Image (cartoon, rainbow, N blue to C red):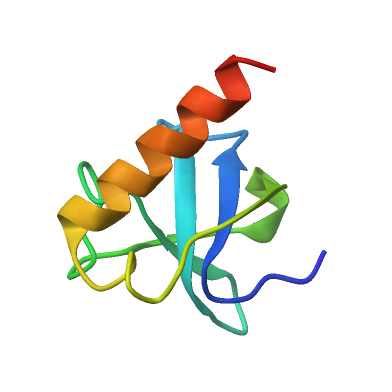
Length: 84
């Protein structure tokens, strides 16, 4: 799996299991993820890439600029996946 900034992932392990998260940065030892609510952009969570599954969705740089915009984008994506 190759992750990049803006990719939307679903947590498959940990206390945030099942939650959609956006990748904000790729590190050597993991990826930083945020959701704009529990994990704000100012304090991202470092996740092991083995503990997330990549989705086909992405968020824009504009949506990654503010917590509110990120929350709305992830809610929209969550609604889209629920209707599938």
